[in-house]
Image 1 (cartoon, rainbow, N blue to C red):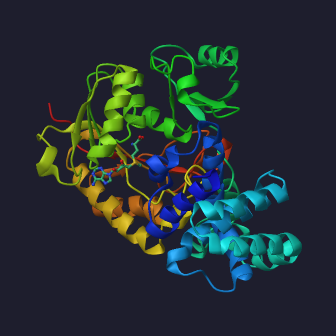
Image 2: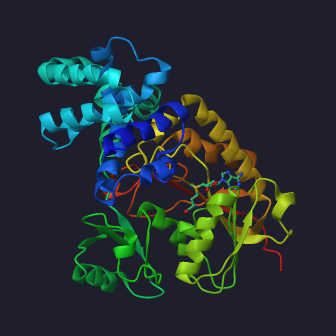
Length: 436
Ligand SMILES: C[S@@+](CC[C@H](N)C(=O)[O-])C[C@H]1O[C@@H](n2cnc3c(N)ncnc32)[C@H](O)[C@@H]1O
């Protein structure tokens, strides 16, 4: 199938069946696109989802009423065409012709006149169509209204910057394995290999590549010299402050980015990595092997202590909780299409359940680091505030740092702050005397 027709089918699965973009890009259908067009396929899929709200607002004007359920692939193809005309450098005539050709590949030959007509009308009436669409903030910022309102309410001075940053493409960021070499030495290795990169202020192990590359091209990747991980995510290991021989729990570990960083940073840890997804734990195993690290790995619901806890308390707990992922929209634009307003309350309850359960497994004197890649207060500061209110032996430990913003409880990085993803960190200590 052609690249554009394939993109339309993959987008149909994300937009109308609720699959994630990462999942659909791994399907055999995506592999049918020739290697030389894989980058184009990814760009079309990411870009069309990034601008979904705006493209849909334009399409609504052009179509009058949506196409019927059986023809959503054509509707997705129209969004692909509009994305190319608005955001890609493809010449207009080529974008229109290629999109019209893709109609046949979808076996919807009846729609070629429709697609041709809609895209040509867009070219003729572009300014007026855009002006009308952009009257709605949700189209202008390409963000569903419910999320836009939440972000605006939470961050009245920053919401526009947040939405703009969320619509940019993030740099590919690496974590240098400083067990093996220092960050500057690896930066030089990268440069010699033709992959220039910058250091990230405040995150010693991080390098931002000027251009994304396949990991197999990175020097020493197979040998564990570097991993792909956003700089904000690289702050977790330092905050957890592990000492050799400690018992450490990573309660929501997959795919293992933070697990491996914690192990790289401190040797001799007894680390248990749990995740409820057996499939995702496979990635933890792969990362541990590649980086030559050791941890015990278990598939379990971290909130069901009877299923996995041996009763021995942990000195450190990392709870990188399941969340709305509203801080990482620039890397996962499908979040804007997949998430619903009602999900936030459900996530908030799940985070609270995990916090309450895991607290029981923490040694008095021990530390629990609560992390989300969310920018919504319900999942962050309010969650911690509520927990401290309920839990008499929990104490908030302010994080003093040069990155992010200090809140009454925890610290927030907003998307784009120093080029990083949006993350929230809160550090809690358990009062009482440690057990011998
Ligand atoms: C934000 S991701 C973790 C990312 C990981 N810490 C890293 O740095 O690579 C959240 C993880 O929580 C897992 N999860 C969700 N609910 C869980 C539960 N009840 N118990 C354990 N893991 C859970 C998900 O499968 C997902 O892998």
